[in-house]
Image 1 (cartoon, protein in one colour):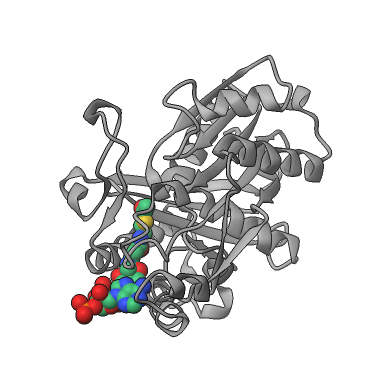
Image 2 (cartoon, helix red, strand yellow):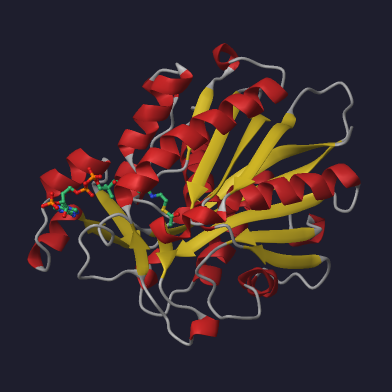
Length: 320
Ligand code: ACO
């Protein structure tokens, strides 16, 4: 079977860093509460006028540079976001244009925080079926634009950024690298625990609303279960796992997963402390950091999973 292999990864974070203490001036909150309940210490916010596609372009350029590829080598762009610049066209076609790419195709995928997993799964299937040979899979978000700045239960949690992964068909039949297994799930019964209370057909803009405790409960259970399913589908056990790269929403969710999967925290990649929750960008951002500092190496078994509004969730097992 034609497998998709990770060729490179790149990322972009906006320049502006917002420390927890900045919220103390306008909200009844403090650094100690945010750190102890979430593990978040700081996050990046996009500058005025800096959009999701601007950040996606920069992350994609970094991924292409890291692989030594040009856009001519890319067949398609799949971009996961819930915060596209415009209602249409897609942020993906704006990234395509920004990269100077006029061939192939580009489209957005929307599965909130699980968006990168849905985009990666789609790209993997397109490569396996022979529809494309090399795809840029991007997660890019400006969640700072969705915040209700008077709601201390949500506005301290999120950040902006973009990550991009270049995946390509593995032609070498003898290689065991590639995306080994994926699992996708969704259940619309849980809409009310995590949503934005506005949209085009409602003719309002809206803000993010979340019942944090409920989301937390589903997150640990559902992410651990689908991770175990995907590990088994890949013919592996948790002992084979080198790195878990979960969606970066809350340090305590990462610790919960580590405990349930019996994979120690020193094999769990954590960037939520520096990035906050960047929704669909969180996984490629975390992977980019861990690949750049040489924790994730070629041949490593990497298990990744994310859950978000929908609820929608998914997992992938990759031999890097
Ligand atoms: N500063 C100080 N106090 C706060 C803050 C804050 N920033 N936020 C909430 N509190 C207060 C609450 O008002 C509450 O006060 P009360 O007891 O007087 O009513 C108290 O702290 C406890 O609130 P809880 O919501 O019970 O706190 P909890 O320990 O559950 O932590 C949190 C809240 C951090 C939101 C947690 O539930 C969480 O991380 N949930 C998961 C979120 C998540 O995973 N999202 C992922 C998907 S995101 C997506 O898809 C877009």
